[in-house]
Amino acid sequence: MTSIAMTSKLCSTCAFWAGSRQVKRDGRVEIHPYSRGQCRGGGFQYALMAALATCKKWQLWPAAAGFGPAMGCK
Image (cartoon, rainbow, N blue to C red; front, side, top):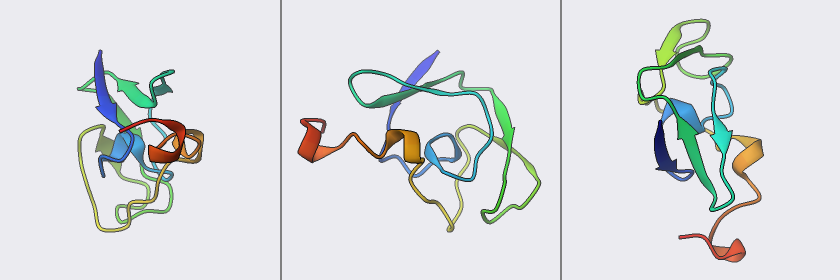
C-alpha cells in the first residue's frame, strides 16, 4: 500500500475517480500503487485510469475534504 497527500493532484485523490482508496486519520489517502479505477466525469470520462495518473480536471475527493491545513495536516 502507498500513502499519498490528499492534495496531490492524482486520480486517486480526485472526486471523479472510482477506484479503491481510503482516507487515513492523518489525512493521507492510502492506495495500492497499481490499482485502477474508472474516471467518472473528469478529463478521461469512462476510461480506466491508474491511481497515480493525472489530468487537468482534478477536483478534491469529498471524503478527503475535511482534512488540510485547518485540520492540522500539512
